[in-house]
Length: 95
Image (tube, rainbow, N blue to C red; front, side, top):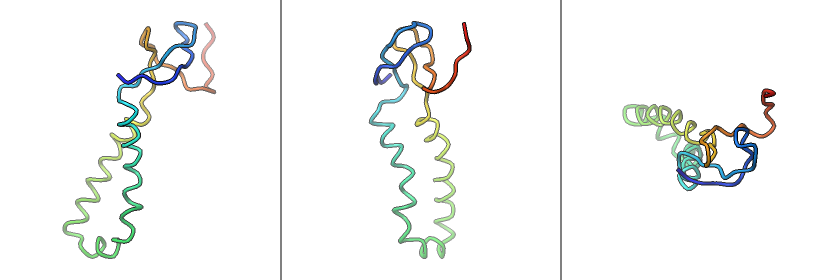
């Protein structure tokens, strides 16, 4: 697991280091996945005309968005106890 900055753990009741399932470098590269369509804008006339090859490729790209979003939105966990760290600004239930 990849370590990141410190956040408050509700279970430990203190600021702890958090871990992500995937490394920060991998998460940055997966964010670049969403910029691929912007880079493909000049090729739109060719892609629209060549539906036999480009349509299945675009469909495969769209299927890949789900796993990418899952990696990017992966919640952090406490390095000490393994509890999920709630997002800041989210109200937690009283004890």
